[in-house]
Length: 124
Image (spheres, one colour):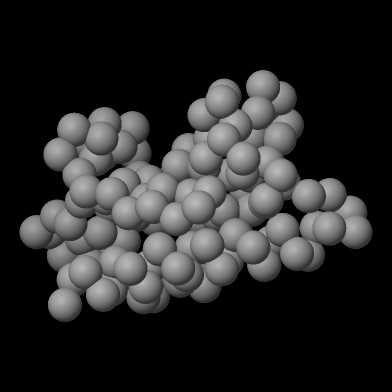
């Protein structure tokens, strides 16, 4: 799990959905804003009920997302506040268990890396 200083608060997430920009990949969407403050980047993962009706599955997806984003935090600019939203078919792609577990973790890292590359390319 990410430290609390790196997780977006509810008020910040509401602001992201009102005023933010977004980037898509196949199963993941990043909604974000860049604040003028020089603070550490903040990221949250949102899993709607349309992804899965089971809370266990939604929580597993969120935990895997937080674990995967740890290695990419240093790449995010200061003042970045974002929320990754899982898509409807995310359970199939990221939610595998036991023998598929490693590939699902790798899949989420690849998806996050794809979105962050788009973010870097759009910023230039």
